[in-house]
Image 1 (spheres, rainbow over the protein chains, first blue to last red):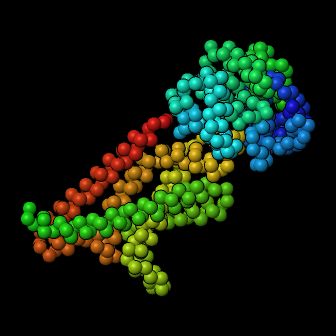
Image 2 (image 1 turned 90 degrees about the vertical axis):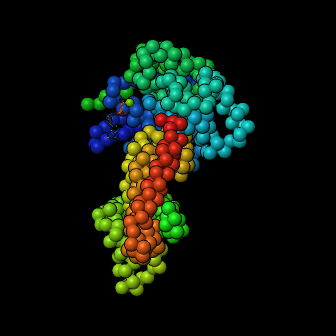
Image 3 (image 1 turned 135 degrees about the horizontal axis):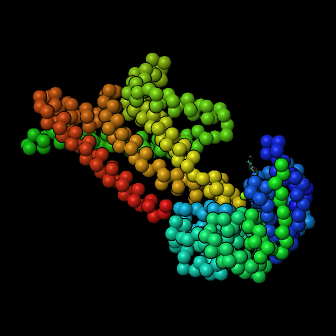
Length: 211
Length: 213
Ligand SMILES: Nc1ncnc2c1ncn2[C@@H]1O[C@H](COP(=O)(O)OP(=O)(O)O)[C@@H](O)[C@H]1O
Ligand SMILES: [Mg+2]
């Protein structure tokens, strides 16, 4: 369970996040919706340790937790970026296994045993040797998901998972997220796509643009 | 033909010296250039300021002047180098400055998202550089670095002025002694061969790095 308490953040004196309070329970899908510029990405970045907050507290299973702390090993928050940010110089397999190998020190056998099933589950079996430029948008997104899941995060967070894809892929994305939910993955979906949020989310949190 | 055979050994000895200057300069200037390139986008203003000054100095004055300064100038304040060391000192510092500019651009071209993805995966800054950033930078900078490498082959002839027995000096000695153009032409041909071989090598390297985009 992750709780955000009284999160505040402003840029150059302009408040973007104004006293955000929300809770996400294990196994849930939480959608964070709101118009463009409302601060959804800012919130996600704070949660992922990519941006700081001015005040407030983040709790993981009731204990204070600092996503920016460098002694965290497993990435508590896995992030699927809006344009995926795959490493173009690495194959699918290398993209997904780099951090488990270097950070979690997983052995070769452990990688085979634990990562292969993730790839298979995400319909990436047989694609291990391909480079990102050889993949379709949907495949890139699934590699990004696999890469985040391989680090066994407590929560998987997506920034606008449908925005970089063809509209016809929306159903696929929602099925994929619901599928992961069945496996018990806790997910946060930042989106301006209200329809998607309605379809998949257990809980919808609205961020309003502050004027 | 007979004449060519008689002067070839002295020219080849000169080529070895030229290659030595060339290879040792690359070995010294590339890593230094990468470090300086990183330093040029350091968050510390003093480091950026110093490195910018260094690059400005090295690129804004002739390499020939730098070479003469190190070998003939510095001894006046009691800093002496032997000839080859003086040449390498000047060449490495000079070329590292050009490489630094190239690498600075190379690092700048990597999207910030690459660093952020690495960060949320908990890779250390060093792991991020080694596995993700540097390989992409190297791919991007092969063409401009290659240009400098070709320039270096030709620039290496500047060591002539501090009395190093490189290819050009070998040819010049033969030409003066035998009063003929042939050694100069031969020297030109050998430089052409060296640049051609290097160009082919660089093309191969570029092609090799085409395995991803
Ligand atoms: N690093 C930053 N510096 C200054 N302003 C920023 C920065 N990041 C975001 N903003 C501003 O904060 C607001 C919210 O941005 P963002 O969180 O990206 O919104 P959303 O994802 O909901 O579209 C925008 O007005 C944006 O310009
Ligand atoms: Mg956004």
